[in-house]
Length: 227
Ligand SMILES: [Mn+2]
Image (spheres, rainbow, N blue to C red):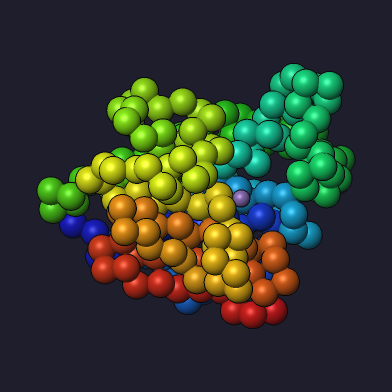
């Protein structure tokens, strides 16, 4: 099928107002568009579970893929393995998310189970071929020289410079994970590297941060409003 747009949305990190302002501008139509959410719905914001549950709802729609981010993975491991082995979630923004989740559990005893099942079903990447061109969407990136189906979870969810500096593939890779102002000071706009990488995390949780969306068919960018 031919899509009008192939949209990807970068890290949200619990900033629901910013997310809604972006989503309003995009005017997504599941009958004509395809949408990939790049993960990191939770942690570091004030409305983490609202973003998480929005992603849950979106993932039920036609032509929407909600990928797994490293923050969802940290949350899953925290509840699967316990604090001693997976306690890194709490200091990385999980504290606030956990409190919100507990409030939801008080209203709905199945909330934890639903949340963990949702995370466990999230794919690590999505591959598409459009007009003979390959596109790969994942949260963090790819380990250079390793075939897509052999990529490990550590690379797909956590890799940074090794991917940015050494990727030589022909596929366009669209990722979140590293806020653009951490790479280029004061930059809150997606970064397109020469080696076919688009970095779409524009620091949603930072004071001047934004949530960004790209249409990979023509590189058009939409961004959330300033607060
Ligand atoms: Mn992130």
